[in-house]
Amino acid sequence: MRVVIRIIAVLLIVVGSIWFLQGINVLPGSFMTGQTRWAAYGGIAVVVGIGLLFAARRRTLKG
Picture 1 (cartoon, rainbow, N blue to C red):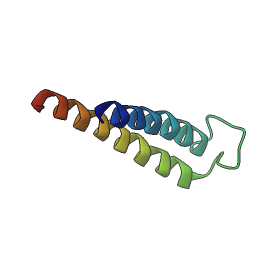
Picture 2 (picture 1 turned 90 degrees about the vertical axis):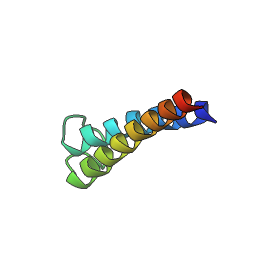
Picture 3 (picture 1 turned 135 degrees about the horizontal axis):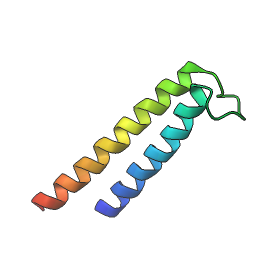
Picture 4 (picture 1 turned 120 degrees about the vertical axis):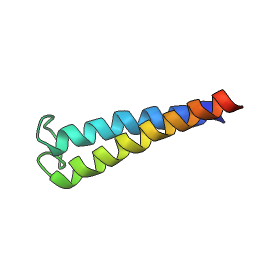
């Protein structure tokens, strides 16, 4: 289960980073480019992904 959580966390971080960069108009090429809403969604996804990584690590240390 920890492996699945880590995979989901890494995917959230990668996808969230792409959304954030497109939202702040650094990475052009889609309908998300220049939309601050997508920058916010991306930032949230990155934070959730990092939180999941820490939770999976903490669970590993305790378990």
